[in-house]
Image 1 (spheres, rainbow, N blue to C red):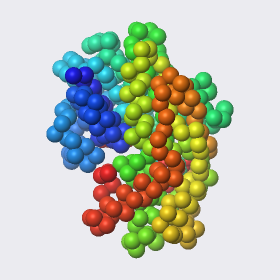
Image 2 (image 1 turned 90 degrees about the horizontal axis):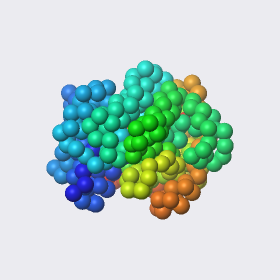
Image 3 (image 1 turned 180 degrees about the vertical axis):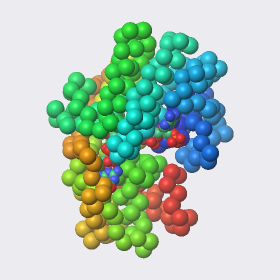
Length: 328
Ligand code: NAP
Ligand code: GDD
């Protein structure tokens, strides 16, 4: 039975990846950091089928010990401080988790078992002020946030360990991917949750920042499949994972409000509080390398994604009367 370690298992992607690997007969080890209140909402349904271990990206010894004790064949490094606005408020901590944390995991692998296949969760945020449209593996990086800068470091240290120590280390440059398990602070879930609340008469307005920003939004379960495919290939490499389509925040609002028969312009208010010190205006990826080499392609369209998220929020609110953001 193959064994995989997932850092960040309590996050959106970690929970979908764990389910994906369990369905393929993997033994799944999930690393969580110590918190005073346990937050296993996203993994509750299959928690008894995985092994939870305590560790932290800030603590090198904890990573070495986990690898020594559990001897995984694959390590998926999904843990990070992943919210861009927080990275402006806590730039050093973001660097510790999201940049140096990658080196700590790679070093643990190098020391304990250099045969481990390693996946690094890199990001389209690295393209930032884009130098090319669409963005592909060879597009130069120009990050626009401390988070983006940290991810560039994580990407290059992954390549460096591959080249220096011959590790099977892959970097997936994933564009935005969403689902009902997305954190409520990210714009897609913020919108669909508000649409559901407004539809049910629980709220009346939605405050957003920049409506003109464009993103290439895909469906998270499709994207964890791409992570796994990278580690099954016969050689390690880096891949863009995206839909190839871009839509603005404004369009996302239109489609989500339309779906429940509401006029978005009557409810959305632009609030400068949500503007960022520097913005990423346009992201659209070219996933042709992943298609050609890994035979990966997205299965959910933009319209379907919006509907899946609105439906999940409506159902959760109707069932509980109180939103349970991470279930679904
Ligand atoms: P997420 O929902 O924010 O989950 C992040 C995970 O990292 C959580 O499980 C969190 O644990 C854990 N974590 C944070 N700091 C940690 C630390 N010091 N030690 C151990 N665990 C720590 O993120 P996601 O959307 O699933 O994204 C997964 C990864 O892909 C992240 O690296 C993200 O930057 C990257 N990425 C995401 C997207 C996207 O669109 N979703 C696109 C490109 C790249 P707690 O539950 O304790 O907070
Ligand atoms: N969060 C948020 N809240 N974003 C808003 C709002 C708002 O009220 N109003 C407008 N936006 C705009 C942001 O300015 C940004 O341009 C866009 O919506 C998307 O913001 P987020 O959903 O917060 O995602 P992100 O693109 O900054 O970052 C996500 O995707 C990256 C991949 O490109 C995160 O998941 C990162 O971890 C990931 O790497």
